[in-house]
View 1 (tube, rainbow, N blue to C red):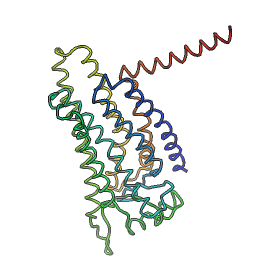
View 2 (cartoon, rainbow, N blue to C red):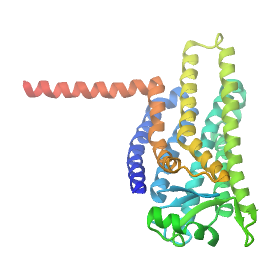
View 3 (cartoon, one colour):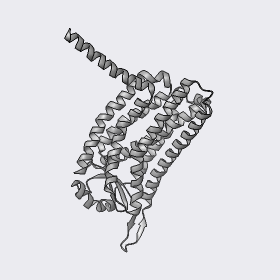
View 4 (cartoon, rainbow, N blue to C red):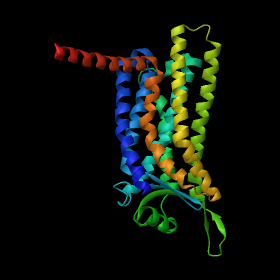
Length: 330
């Protein structure tokens, strides 16, 4: 079945993510602290987030369903039948999902301050540096509460999902854990009525995404323009470092938009028109698991310091192998 393939992708992505993010953390700790300063802590935080995200992902093993005017994120992990706990972990998955784009916007905001308003960085020295993570934490917590209170499970939703859950997973919808947004319901006379709570929860999540995306775009444009204007006054080393970081952040933003927020944004939109595309649902569940595994590769290959370290390790391995062969032949 399709969900078994998706779970295989999730488990493989989990293993790969532990390696790629662990290696990037090692490079940040050994190579980047002196070069990037406080910004290395932002990079390390994002890598640690990716590791944590994959643990939540493999515990919940989320699947996506669109049923008429409702979108559903299903907890298909080992705790899906545990009352209350399974639902809370599904909300935690949504919260960690929202933390991704908020941490990205934090990185872009910090680069904006460093390039456009360097004097303001004095307010983020020492323990005050932790304040820069406050907006991201707020977005993550708010995302959780929108899921918990606005997109909860109801008997009406369980009844609507009875046949799809049995067809797709062979499961009873009344024993499964899920988060869902049902935009409207029909009364006994067949009249449609908007579900205020679900609509507020969905609009709240959409608003958080729009705010974070707008922050990224505005900071990126201003940073790019400032770098161009000040290119003549900066040293070649500083310009090259800024260029590498900007390319890295741009790709790190493009990737989640392609693998996470694009598919998920369409999942919010399609139920409004009662459009169901099975491929989109399946790809959303797979791509959100793949993203944390491949994201570190951007920094590893785009930042020269990391790239040189990687090739040095490869060359060192070749030299060691050649040395062993020489000793054996001798």
